[in-house]
Amino acid sequence: MTKPQKCSSTWSAMLGCKSEMKEGCCWAVGNGEKIHIKTDPWILKLHNKRPIPNFLSTEQLVLVSELILQNPPSEEGTEDKLLWLHHPNGVFTAKSFIKTLNDRAPSSSHYGNAGNIPWKKFWQVKVLAPNLQIFAWIILNNGIAVGSRMMTYYKDINTECRMCNGVVETLEHLFLYCPVSQAVLFASHLTLRIDASLNLSVHHYIKSWLLEGGDYSKLKMGICLFWSIWKTRNNIVFNKGTVHIQKMLQETYYWFHRDTNIQNDTTLPSEQDLLDSAETVWSPPTQSKMKINFDGAAGIRGFACAAVARNYNCEFNGCQTQVFAFSIPVEAEAHGALVGIELAISKAMRHIIVEGDSLTVINSLKYNNFPVPWRIKNTIGKIKDKLGNFTSVDFNFIKKEANFMAHSLAAYAVQNQLSNQWLTSPPSCITHLFSEDSSS
Ligand SMILES: [Zn+2]
Image (cartoon, rainbow, N blue to C red; front, top):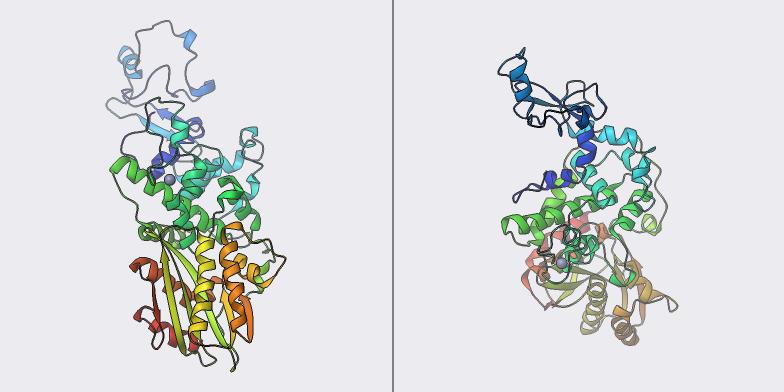
């Protein structure tokens, strides 16, 4: 079967594991018009479910229907029906397909070439919808038909990434390093910053989410993001669609929040990490201090950062945004911290707490011996140069959820391409958040 021009993401994903599907199928003969005598499985008792070619001397017979005409059929006129043998009623369902893969996964050597993925654990994950689990499995088995792979089958195919039209579309480029994917991964709840210098693979990310265990929410979000990227890419390739970051995120969250109807019966204990100890709710500073929250955001036209200052009473004390066309996520975050410092200086603040959800930026500012990524070295240096303007400065890492106001403002700035400073009253996009944070 070849891939049709117009093709749904599920269908194209399933084509990637068609050999596994084929093995589980057999035709129930009706009028025999759909069944090829030699190539289709139609005799359940035989090995491979089809006659051994050498036994067939009658070369002219092609369809089973032609065989039937020579021996009057018992059920005339009924259509041939393809059966899925792993389901009692012969009906193919994604659930039953996954179960089949699940049953054979641990013993099958064919699964061993995907970078030591703990397959047993993978198939035990119950939070993914069946189509997403199959999709992840196909990615891990290099079954995704990206441009670089298609090149080996078709010479004249366009192998460029259709989302950025920049480079050859490899698995890693499409899901991680394409500027569009980077923007989506960073703007999502994962706030995933892809550092190209580390050159990590898609397998690496999926495996690390899998090993993290817990409720597998990172794994789920990651796969939903990859799924959304894959759908967008296919929509561009097959339907002349376009890139729309916000729609890609909506698609991601749709799949993430969709009920999979599968009970989560094997919850593994979660690993302790730095995130566990960080604050999940924003808290005001002590009376003498001012707290400045910063964040970065990615959008289709570039990046933006924002910083918001609040006092012990959760009252607004100024905010600032800045947009830039060329950047990477961690740079946007570091700029957010710089913008926060500049805001504090312009408001003549003395005691400040600089707070953000980028551990890299906070650690770079907090510890002198922290290996600062070269992309943000300059910005971190600029911030440190300005710290002499304050009597006291603290740097604090918090969870993304607690940094919602700065995040909203940065998102607003990137959407509206707005670099601005508000000193007396907050912009309308965050006004409603003041009552929320102070009441919690
Ligand atoms: Zn690209």
